[in-house]
Length: 134
Image 1 (tube, rainbow, N blue to C red):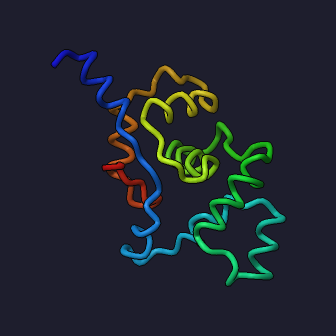
Image 2: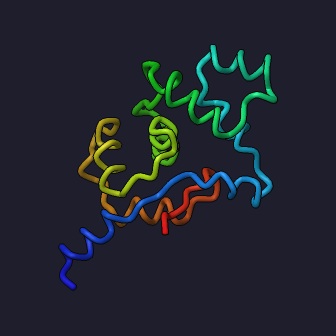
């Protein structure tokens, strides 16, 4: 297999946020995602915490919070940017090529991203529940 074929194969790998991982790991998705919410959604969560399921939080972020200026800022750590990209896409699975294309909009030097680097980061994540799509 040529290097070009290996890169193409890597770019086709897809990932998503595995909500079950949070429960299995004894972590709270709500706590992890709360800092991504805009003020209006934080207030809604505070007033109706039982109505904010993981799915509704993702949809709120996709439809509301991700539209705010600075939702994904250049200053954020790379894994946080990736997490917010998944949230802004409604946790739709994204290929490494799609992730790199979207990330390049928020990086000073997007040429430094490779499919191998992003795959390694996602495969070794211990915080955000990234999971490779089978």
